[in-house]
Image (cartoon, rainbow, N blue to C red; front, side, top):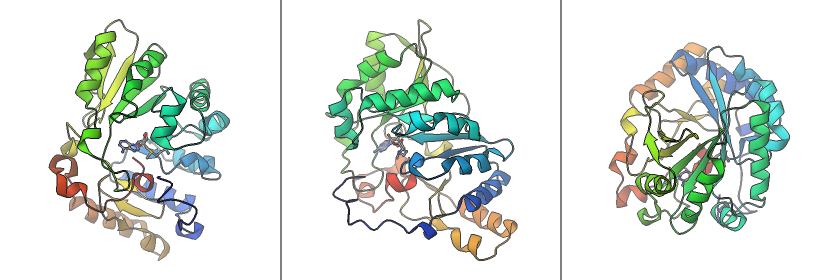
Length: 305
Ligand SMILES: C[S@@+](CC[C@H](N)C(=O)[O-])C[C@H]1O[C@@H](n2cnc3c(N)ncnc32)[C@H](O)[C@@H]1O
């Protein structure tokens, strides 16, 4: 969220515009009728939402759901135990460098790396395991941190995942030249610690899995720019104000809030979701071009990554 766009004059949504926890949980139940097996809470920063544990408890009560969350880690040391107690199963923490200056250059945040590392330790101690760590790699900014990150987390039991820098939204000024490819990242780490590729855990898994040949753990690479996986994508995204997005790179969503607040039955909402999903034909990453990059896409901070 660049400060020049989301500065102090930015008009954020009023609280009443956000879905309530009960509305989110109702939608989650309806989505499970369509085969949703996993829910990831993301953001924005999910841990700044007051009483998030109450939402987790509501979602955890839905049978058969794998429930996880992605966070910048700044409040994780404080909250890990409560999140686990509320029913969260696993967690992903974003960390783009071990070097404070590089980390802050990537994210423009005002907390140090040490705080994120404390959060990761607290999450593992609370049993939110295996902890996944997301590192977005941007050429010329944090690519020199790749080897140190791999070294740091090798043997820790945590799964470090490298993500190709994506053109989500339009405020990040993305250029193809900024992308360090998954192939480059694997070559870099393999030169220091030999790797071999492993089978995916399930069809449509976004991260390609690699393990250290000496048994000291695994890493992942998410190559959504250079190896698009649109055809296997099964992700639906729900914005905080209740719009359904069928693609991370969408320009518009499908509002469900009016149905929720207008007395629609679960069956009616379920039909509306099915109607959107059946028409879905998104393949942004497969057809990315100089033209599509310029589209007024929804921001990553709004759609959640
Ligand atoms: C948008 S964040 C939201 C959750 C939380 N605030 C966090 O920092 O993890 C979700 C994930 O998207 C990743 N991300 C952000 N911008 C990205 C980009 N341009 N390309 C690829 N991944 C990106 C972040 O690193 C993070 O792991």
